[in-house]
Length: 409
Image (cartoon, rainbow, N blue to C red; front, side, top):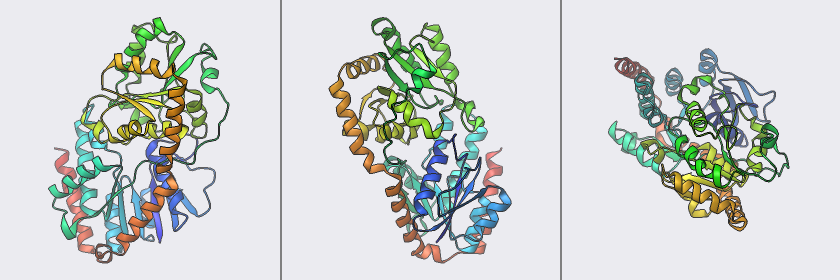
């Protein structure tokens, strides 16, 4: 089959989680199919064998939709969905990122309404809808039932978690200490990997380091807060809040440090491997239960033991496997206690690293791409993929734009 995949962002040194996911699945599917990647950002200098790529524009994407058998995207353009339905191509909506729930954490009513409309549109007209875990799947099935897509009219629903490449080789590099010369070779590094979006909890992390600054000044918190590849997303960042709080407590530049540059994709393992412990804390919001955090998977990929907030199924799986320790959201004292317990116990850290290596094998991109390939082939063999309708496509477009008008009121 000919598969068209929309990659939402740059492919190269600066990559976001959604762009990484789409690109890695494209690479995996290219082993069995003819894959074309529409890059909605910077193109890489070269593409792996078996992948065509082009700069995504509306005209080019529509043209390519009409010559492909499968169209895959996290955000399927409505014009492409209608064209694909009219042609008989399979549409795959990748809803692994619960954007609607994320937007609820910081307001923005117009963006939230638009996101809801688009999510519902995908659920109404996609042939295959993907999610990242069982909690998301339950939510998705409830939403499909609410709009009447049940029984024979229901789309296929597939679970494809966020994945991992093969384990990185040890680098021996020290980019964190190179960036911050004041961090000594003997210091312990706790790494908050990734930006602090509005659904995370930097306040608890900073407060946890207030007593550590007195009792364990050798323990440093490093937060990677560089400008994101998509500058529009920085509006949802709380990096500034964490900086202010660290400054108010007298921790900034002493116990708490902020990396102002986006870590190059090819170098990320060096930063993760230099750290002793990973730390990610989320706020107690509805987003947490359904989250699929790429940063968790980076901890796992690099074999970095981590402390995570309780409340989502991936964190629970990490803890059950022994790769992470969970704390209740908002419990700064627990973060302090758990971090010291782990950092003072080399044997416990070693067991966590070993557990991470075992768990990581469940999440390789190559395996997940094979699972996705089977899902697509099953849809291709089903009646829904064999009965395209131009009227259905036109009705879908009209309904979508009607919903958009309602959302703007």
